[in-house]
Image (cartoon, rainbow, N blue to C red; front, side):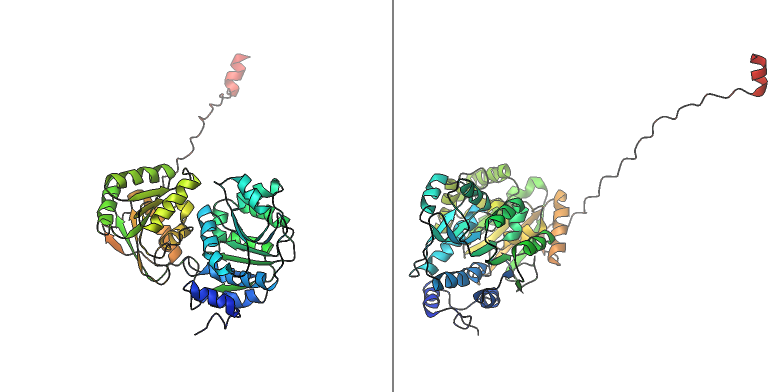
Length: 408
């Protein structure tokens, strides 16, 4: 079996991994770390929950440790971009224990927090800067941060950054970075637009892939319930009631709908919290901490948090609303069965969501087992209305020769 030492990591970093409870590399780590340690650009494709953070974090820490220079004021020696605040915080939390003893300063800058406080902290510089694209550009526009010293760039969950409309922000950031740098791009899927983005950001990259993009983790038990929309909430409460002591994440489609559902579950006696775009960063942080600590057992979330929650013992993920983007289904259910554990992903499908279900199953290349109900007939497209023709003009009748003579 391959060890972290075999991958080229030094003894101190391997010891810190053992302290963190990480002893054996995952497949994505085993494939991505060696070329990254050699300074190659890397594209890493793997299912969510397979250890991608360490796959880019370990060679990054090793490279920064090998060149022990201090960052200049307002500078970042390395930059990790993430699509959401939750994921940025998760990455920083995972890397900080691995940096202990290496004298590497890690900073996080995201929206929803004081930009003045972030500017003040960046005055000391950062060895590792984890950021969301929008807040990073705000800080650069304020001249609180420059990227001229940045020699390492990581794009984590790059496909979701494209889904969230960050393509222009990413190009603006790339224009501020040195041409001489090492770039690593990690994702669960590789849509066409991201392949085009990779051509602009990476040079002769090594591509590593440990599972076909879009496939779900094998340890997840998937099922779907076919229900009428009016029966969704009652069915969800019945299923949650069977495992009140276990953590569950429930995904909704809209902010308003998720907030309403959280209140309904609270009225049903569940310890529940909600995170979505209308919540402040403080409220979202408290909800996540309560969920981690066990005070909250059910977390209702929109896709804004689909890739920012890394809690090993989430046993159940519910797709209360099916996502519009098929790939998001895989990202959602990847919140369970993490760190080698098993998990269950339960979906609800109403008659008007059959199109979403068909798209999800097509993307995964498999059918989701039916737990209850029967598949609805796919919604038929509305017949196209035939364009109405303008009324025909009546042509004036040409007088006959005889009548013309008579008129003369």
